[in-house]
Amino acid sequence: MDWELRGPGLAAGRPPFDVVWYRRPTPPVFPPTLHPGDLPIARRESQDFLAGLYQLVSPDAFWVNPLASRPRAELKAIQLQEALRLGLTIPPTLMSNDPDRIRGFMDEFPGRTVYKTFYPAQWESGNDVAVMLTSEVGPDDLPSDDTLRVTPGIFQVKIPKSHELRVTIMGHHVVTARLLSQDSDHTRMDWRGGGAYLKVEPDRLPEGVERACLELMQRLGIVFGAFDFIVTPEGEHVFLEVNPSGQFLWVEEVCPDLPLLAPFVDFLEARRPDFRWQPTPGAIRHADYYERTQQRLDATDPVHVAPADSFISVDEEEDEEAEGEAGSSSEKRS
Image 1 (cartoon, rainbow, N blue to C red):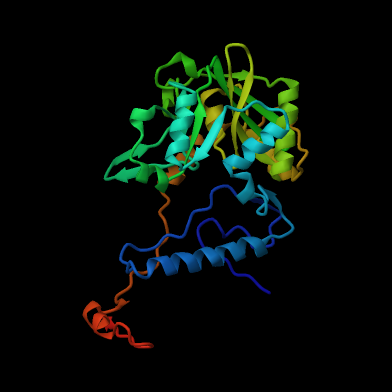
Image 2: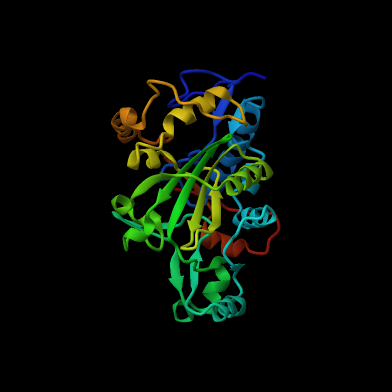
């Protein structure tokens, strides 16, 4: 078998590669002129082709994270179950689309329920973007039962916070950032909505919690993860989730005392799941590359195929006449 890969960023080499950072691959991009009836087929064919490509292109590479582990490791229910087995504390949680169970959960913890999505959600309209963040909810905030049944949600008990932690683990190298989320109204419920309001300081995990995080990664089959914890006023660490594809360079951008770019580059070069970083003089810094990278991203456009000049679709009037006739079909070209 031979390979030919062409496209932006692929000129530097050809498979097999020795290390693959598989974070958030861009889904197939289709021209806006593609017929709506063709879009599901084109998307499915492209996704199946890419899935095979990823499996075959570098089977012996060091993957961050391994392909086989990715689907299971991203599941919130699996993460919470494995965290419990390892002795980590989690919030009382209900994952459901059953209106009676959801209301019963709220009755059990009156005024203390928050809602989360299983996957990041946002809606775009023109230049406006609405993002779904963690939100306090009560019985009066719930939509109709039919709407609740359509989309399962994560309902958890609201945990009192002293502060929060963002813990980035690459191999066995642990970087713990203290998020002073309770210092601003913009970050108190969900620090992701805070932007410039979020203050970050270096911190450390207790030894037992750090050991449990490393074991959790092993059980999930991942070598990189971004963990989220709440630290209560009493000092208890409450596990929320681990994102196998989580963002991490923003931590160094906000707090340069927490180097992440240098250890991550060394992690990729080391290709070891038990990697531990040792700082060296003159290590690269995120600030040295930020402006240059931003300019490159701003100049990058998605690659489209040429627009189609014709479509094949079923003629609705003729289709009605042919309804019920086995094997009959009619087409028109537009």
